[in-house]
Length: 198
Image (cartoon, rainbow, N blue to C red; front, side, top):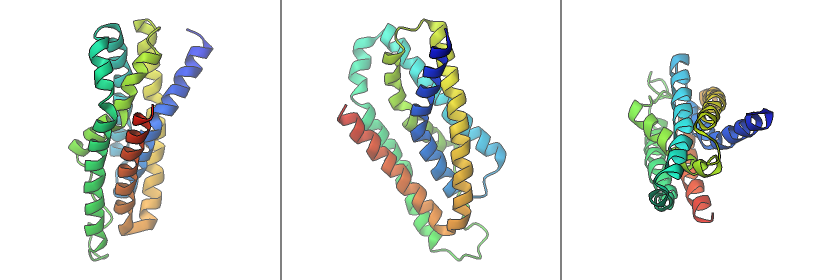
């Protein structure tokens, strides 16, 4: 392990975290009154999945390669379905919320449940399974360290995304949920298209 390994791991983490950053931004837009403890929890949730998926990919490369190569073809479809569902739900809630009385206490504060967050975490990190191919030459210790670096980078990026989303979400008021839903659906489509043209 050297500086090049560390630098490559940071870059890998930054690249993988982009989808999670966009979803974090959408979450901040959607829930403008989110507490800091929840922001930290969401960022760690995304970090956990972004670290876990490359490790699962690494294990698959070193054990059940033939099954993994078949599963890899399904990744764009799974990401599209998961993000399309969550984004569509957020979009519908945003439209309903936009029609509510602005004086209502709950306007601009649609809560994100743990189920939705878990789906987001899996959907945004599932394409990271294929990173198992790129780190296949690493031994187990290096693969774990690489995954931990990816987790730290993802946490920082996602926390920043939620904070930015919250700031703009407050200004956008009722339309924030609509923008958040559009972003999630857009990410699902982007992952789907880029997965098909690989």
